[in-house]
Length: 488
Image 1 (cartoon, rainbow, N blue to C red):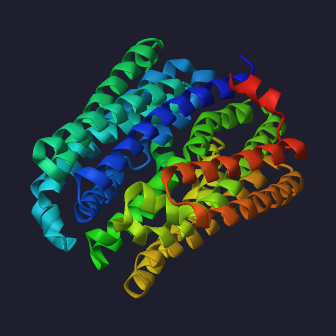
Image 2: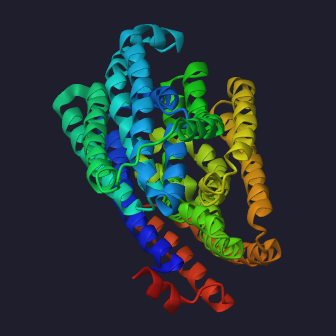
């Protein structure tokens, strides 16, 4: 199968799965925020999820991405080593899971007290079990990416999120509140982990002839996991520590404002995440085959399409944030509006990062990414400590935007040094896309004051999308027929 066709097939499978899961999670977010939990309970729940996310990074320490990188290489050159890579990486992961999960279960009350949130203790107890299955689920999805079978990751992702939604809603409706929500997350992760491990065993472990492995291969895997540990850990801290610090310095209500804004941006970022997940293994294959020019062309096209989508999306998000939050989630969450407007800028940086960072891992530049991520994660944490007590939740959002912008820039520079893409072409595209976004924004800005209900909000958003679609077509940036033919 040609490279472009394989990327598109993986993208469509991943996008479809992520759309299903994000619609499911969007419905769950709406139900929890508006009907099933109070704003304080909503904030407490996602504060605990953030804490568990930080703890979960210790169950990985780069093992999955290192294994995926070597799977991607050896399945092309010496496939008899693949079972050894899977066996070694999973064994290492199980040891880490046992240490972290048992610590959380035994010490849940102490952890809650340390975080200045004693009411989080029962959630952290359940969270110890959630960590076990979520880590195995994540391991499986990462390895599927290494095999360039992202459609299997999509299946597992759907299983996790759809099961989660069903059990969270059922258990909270039964009166279990935030405890029920946490149990729902545990059940979803357990179901997905079981599916992921079965698929790994049947589709890959047993289908490759097992030639064993040698100590040198294991040592290379562990050595490569060191920079991946730094970058992955820094990435998790960067994404979670702000939420933890908002809860530590402020209160669960403030966490609800911050988390709601981040969840909306995550929903918007589904296409970028899908494309980045699908395309990144291709760079490793192209490098192994000495086709760096082809890799550069792929990156240029990928980045252009991402910017074409997310620069106008950020403009629109800034303009409609106020009526959207008030009408969809209720006036109780109005404090999330300025946070969401700041996070709209973050959306652009994250979209670029989604199609760049994993690709660097497959190109063997994980150490560069790790250094950049470590620096910006530390800077983000420091800025949060300085800004949250003084400026509240918007201070946390500002810190995220600034540090993530620096991280994105560094990653793009490293990518250029590796594959030497045409930055002039991309710069011209950015200028044209910015002009289109400004034109669309003027029309939306004029109509926003008249938005008084959900129908009017949908109409304004639809008009903005329509103006964008006409302008990108007239500009020649997009050929609608070609685009539709690729996606169908």
